[in-house]
Each structure stands twice: as C-alpha cells, then as structure tokens.
Length: 422
Image (tube, rainbow, N blue to C red; front, side):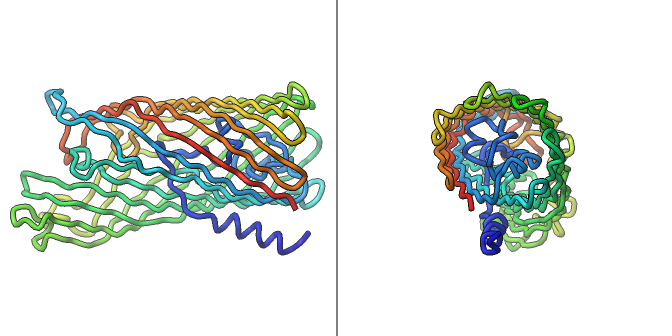
C-alpha cells in the first residue's frame, strides 16, 4: 500500500470542516447515495461511506477508497404565537439560514479478513434563526450546534456469512445560543449570547449476516455521549438606564452545562432482486429520553439581582422515537445507476419541551439520486424534500408568549459525493 495514500486518507477524514445541520437535531445525510435512498444505505458495495451507515459493511470495500460528501440543507417554516388567553399575538417565519452536512471517509482492506476505516461526519447538528425584533426572539433568535464525529473503525470478515466491526467515536460539539432577555418586573431588556465547545468519547459496534446471495441483515449500535460544556457568557443591555443588564449595561462571564446525546440502534435488511436491483429497509431507534434538559448555569447574575438570571433552565424530556426508511437502487449498466428513497421520523418533542432552537415535528423525507462510476471514480448526486410537520409547544418563564405553533415547515436538500479508488 502507498503510505502517502494512507496519510492523505487519514487527513481527509480527520480534517473535515465543521458542519451545521438544519431543521433537526439528528443528522442522517452522510453521503449523496445515502440521501437518495432515504438513509437506508447499510449494505452498499465498495462505498467508503459505510463507515457512517454500517461499519460492518466496510468489508464490502475492495482495496483502498476515499470519499467526500457535501449536503446542503435549507429550512423554511412559519409560526404563530399566543398569549395566556389563547389569542394570537404574532405570526412570522424563520430566517432562511442554510446548513451543510460534510462527510469524509477512508477505508483500506488490510487482507482478506481485516479492514480499517475512518470517517468524519455529523451525527448531531442544527441551525435556526428568527427575526431579532420578534417575540419569538425572547426564546431564541439564533441557535447553532456544529457537530462532527470522528470514527476510527476495525472490521473483520469471519466467513461468507458473518462480518462485524467495532469503533471509537470522538464527538465534537460547538454550541452558540442567542436570545433577547426581557424581565419587565425587573426592568431588564437586553440580549444574551452563550458560545462554547466540548469534546467527548463514545463507541460503536456493528454486525452483518448474509442468509444467501440475495438476503442480508445488519445491526449497528452507537453509544450515548455525555458532554460537559464550558462556554463564554455575554450580556448586552439596551443602553437605557431603565433597562440595564448589570448596572454597566453589559456583562461578561462563564457558563456551564451538561448534556447527554442519545444512544441509538439501527436494524437493516437488504434484498437483491437480481444483479441490477436491490431494496433496503432500515429502522432506527434513538433513545432521546437521555436529552432531558439543556440547563446552563452562569458564574454571575446577568442582571445583578441574586437569584434572577443566574441560569438558563430548559427542560426537554424528549421521548424515544423510531425512524423508518426504505431505499431502492437500480443499475442501468456498469456505469450508471438511479436511487430513490423515503423516510419517516416519529416526533419526539413534547409540548413542554419544545422551543425555537429545534421547532421540528414528525418528518417525512422524499428523495431521488443518480450515480456514475468507472473503475477508479464514483460521482453521485441527490435531491430531497423534507416535510417537517407541525409542532405545538409552551413558552418558558421569560418568553413573551405562552404557547407557539410551528407549521408549514420543510427543508430542501441537495447532495453530491465523490469517491476515488487507489
């Protein structure tokens, strides 16, 4: 093996740019082929992105392969706000703030039994923005979670039927939250910004079993990851003596918080009708109940009044949920293929756990794609449309509304991937 290729592959995977997903928290868009098949892409042949979708399937890669993928996500949506009597007090829409999901992968076959792979891709990410002068801004006017997971993986093929893999996960999150802080009873009117980052470790394991040449099943487990976030706190007053943030109008300090990202199970089935056409089914169980709160504590009061604005409590209490996907792949020839997919995500956000950070209900995703490949290179493109659904949620203590209704929300998706064999 050329050592320069190995070094280049590792660098491509480890130095992938930070990413921001859109209209959601869990990201499944790890390659153009994966987008095209609705995320049901656990058993692909000769695809380096198997590192992300199903590590046990990197045993289907021959030789040495590198891959990069770029997925564009553009969220759109509307909302209505209500007071305590149920009267509508505001209607508006989000500021279109698109995000990118970037994946980089490298796989090398060591021998007939062993494979090594590494990937850098987002598992959790989001970005949302609303008008700064809106009442929704008292909950959040800008929220962003940059996320990337680096997953070095070892896979072993035991025989023609069984293969398995185990890997580590180095998970990075960069969080930025901005909102208007308004406490009329205390004469407070200003804006706050919390910005920080964290690294944490997790692991994953996977196994495949082939019943015969046409039927195969697989399972993937990804562990939960606990982050202890240390962030910078900034508070800016309106420069009005009647509404300061700490007498000088501005305050700077530190913020602290702990959040546990959920563990998940993927269960997949692959059926080959013939040499040209195959169908994948996939079910994903995500244990969102670990995301019970996003409580951030400050080392000083934002308003200079003990007991007021010394923390930003936010109960989540999300429920565990399933995601179901179906993907179809058809090869017209040795070089050209088409793909299509559909996915359905159950809603996991309860009425008392929703906010404008992730105003997302159940999701339905429709997608199509195409691929060209020769002996050395593969190029794939995909388009998708995600119906995000409606979501009703309660306001928090410092929000300028009592309840909210997000509706007519959708996300446009476009993706491209390039793979090179050595």
